[in-house]
Structure formats: structure tokens, C-alpha cells
Length: 328
Image 1 (spheres, rainbow, N blue to C red):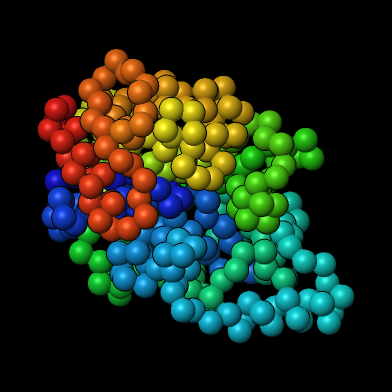
Image 2: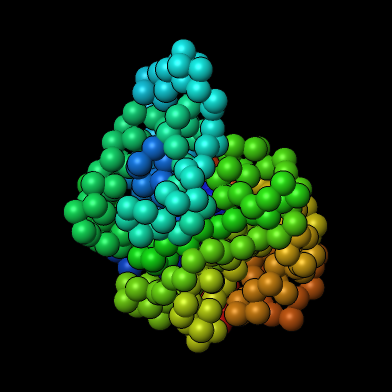
């Protein structure tokens, strides 16, 4: 049995080759939900859906989000309609008094759907409609995710990090903004002054059970992908009590992709493999790139950690398995 902590694209890429090493029926993925937003009344869970679509064989692996070959007629017409109506595009936060009305949700993750700032395909939207409707019927996010995983034929277990709302906020000189506004709406351009995980979330029974097995932290962003999972009550303690192997998203001080470097620096960590090791005191071993000569005080397995194909991912997964063997 093994559990992966997943967010962004790094861990889903790793999962694309994991079946060659780990039996999917004995694998669980705990997905970050700090990126979740309510957009135009629909509950969107990007990091859950990346795993859902990748494992379901429909992910657009050119972008690593959305459904491959999806159409965008609704999305396109939303922009046409907003322009014709003279409405300003997004991101458009709902007013403060509307942030906490309706279903329980962490403040600063409710957006208007006018000229929506996230590109959502038509089949992708059907998933969000179904998720939102099941939540409104009273089902938990864990139960809804399990239902969707069954619809996509997933063999592995996929669970959200919590059933409680938690929002990842980026503090900037112009004020706080949800991570999706910062990264998608503003293209990661605002200066980062700090990161906040807003809300109080507790680990579910499904998450606690998953974290009793050996854990793999994939090469996802340590701050905004793994950070929200660690902010869930009970997770940090569980990680300290189980074998953990982490794959560095850096090659020494060079990040593979995304804003991890800037976010690490803004939260007081060196943007490097050494900084990740410092930020992950619970990690018992690391998988590093062959070109990464960083010396750590924990077991290290080195391989080419670039993942451009499932075959690459399988190579990295074998290194993960070797590292687990040293600490499990």
C-alpha cells in the first residue's frame, strides 16, 4: 500500500508511470483542494480533476489540465456575451457578503462566472455541474470524488485532502488574491508578499487511513500544492509517523516549472532542493535528479527526474520505490 500527495502537475506526471511499480488497487492519492474555487456557481476542483482525468485516460497532456479534445462553446460564448453586454471580464470576486452565503465555503474563493477567467471545456463543465449538484444534495466532497472516480473507471483511490473548505491566498502589494487569480488570472505576475491558507480543515477518516501507509510527496509545488494538505489538521502529525519519500521539484536551485521558486523565497525558504528538504522535516528520504549534487542528511536516490512521458515517470517511480525500501 502507498499514498501519494498530489497537487499541480508534478505528481500527476509521476502517477502516469506509477502503475509499473505500484499496484493501482493498493494506491491512494490525497489531492490538494486549496486551489478549489466556486466559479459561476460551479464547484471547480482543479487538482482533483487533473488526477481524475489523467487516471481516466482523458487528460489533455499538452496543458496538463482539462479534457483532451474538449470543445469550448460555452466558454467562448461567455466572453462574447460579456462583451456585448458591456460587462468587465474576470477574475470577478463575489461581494464580501456573498463569500460565505450558500454552501459552506472558505472566503475568497467564490467568483462570478461573467467572462470566466478559467478556461473550462464543455465536458469538463459537466464534471463541475455534477460535482456541484451532488454537493448540494448533501454528499461530502469525499463521497462525490469517489463517485466521479467510479465514473472515470479509476482503479486507485482518490480522496480530497478534507471535506472542509480551505482557500490558498497569495498576499500581494494590491491585496490578497486566491491562488487561481494569481496564477491563472494574473499569470503569476504579482509580487508575492506571503501565503495564507484560509479556513479550518480537518483530515477525514479516508485521509487518515491513507496516511497510515508509506507516503510519496511528488514533485509538486511545496508551498501551494503540498502546503494546503499539510495545513489540514492531523496531516502533519500523520506524516511524522509514517515513512515518507519526497521527489524534489528542483535540480539544485533550478525549478522544473511553475512559481515554486518565487513562492519558496516569499515564505522564507531557499528556492532549491536544500530548501525543500528544510521545508519537509517529515521526509525520511529524497529522490533527486542525477545532476543535483545537493548533500542531504537523509537517504537519497538519484535518477533523471525530468518527466516528459509515462516511461520517464516509470523511471522516477522506480527510484521512489528504491527510496521507500531504504526507510519503510
